Length: 506
Image (cartoon, rainbow, N blue to C red; front, side, top):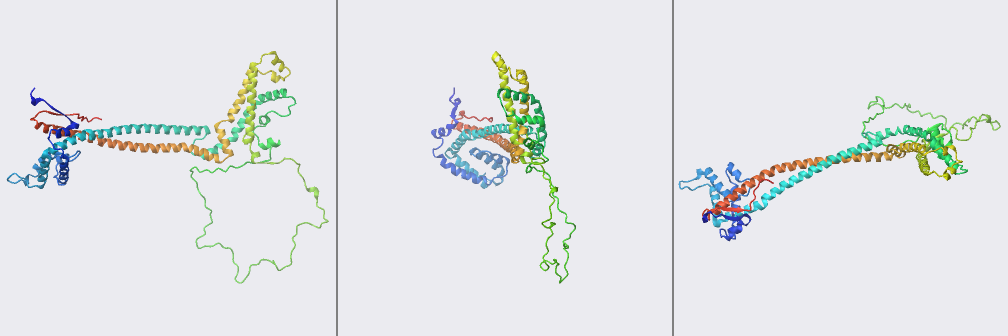
């Protein structure tokens, strides 16, 4: 193989060191570059309007090979300043010709071009690619966060709807709906009281069993439950005194409704008084005094109280004293509440239900395990209601008790009980529900910020890809120019700059 055909392979990152080691450039070449850069910056300030000049001056760092192209352009734009000897009188041409001479002295341009190539390969191009990759990753993260916000919004709305459903409201005007819902409480409590009638057999069985087991038992079993079964959900007054009141003064709830509603304010009509008219209080003629009667001047007058002399007998037979007791009483405060509305009696009612439930469960267990003659003899003298029970019958009674317990233990009723006993609880429930909607608003605001950020990144990506394409094209041009100029110094031998990855894909 001919020596002219043997290629010269140079690693791009070692190009400057190779040029110095082969004595193509001096070691102090950077000292001359600074002066050249200053002249280029000054010369750029006065450039003709030409599309190719605009293309050269945009996108990348101006180097020696750009300066050569600018000279070619100036030969066309400054041809009128050329004299008969072929010299250009234009200052523009003189400035750029001087720059070319400074570059070519000691081959400074080759060292600078090698340094630029290394910088583009190691920093500029990888940096832009990292920005593009970071933008793609950021967009993926934003998409994930946006999906989380959508899911969070749906979950918050779902929880809000579930809470409203449990309470029994729509959730449009929370406080007003809670207060309106409170009006349904008496009716629901009456229904629960009506449902307790099915527990009469269970209560009777429990009472018979206690009477049989505990001799001389004087206390009545589950008295409140028995009373509600017989009389319904009456006032606490009637339960306490044994007769209904003649008047009920229910305690009033002071609940502040601050839900946004349309309100109107009526003004007091004082008539058609004009600004100049005054209210006529009457008038007293000049010089006359107001007649206050004969106060202070006449003889003292005694007040007639309608009572005669002491010897007159008072008719005592007309005074009627009512019977003692509570007949015709007025139910106030907690006594005005119904048994299931009053927290104290309601809790007693629930306790008695659990008491019967516990008895029935225990009795069921006993019936399932009884079978010996001893256990049969044990209840031989028991009432028929106790002896005739089976596990299946106890199951039926137990189901009725548990049904009433579930009716009075619903989430809706628990909220209504708390609202009726504490007006402040309305605020707590409203704040708890609104917090779910507040979360929805926060997530919506977060989504808005995410969308704006995604839009910014999209715009940034649109600028980065053309920039990457431009710098890759300019780097390829620079690589070709360097290889050509080094090849000239070795009699046209092919030169390959290795380790150069100029792909436009990320």
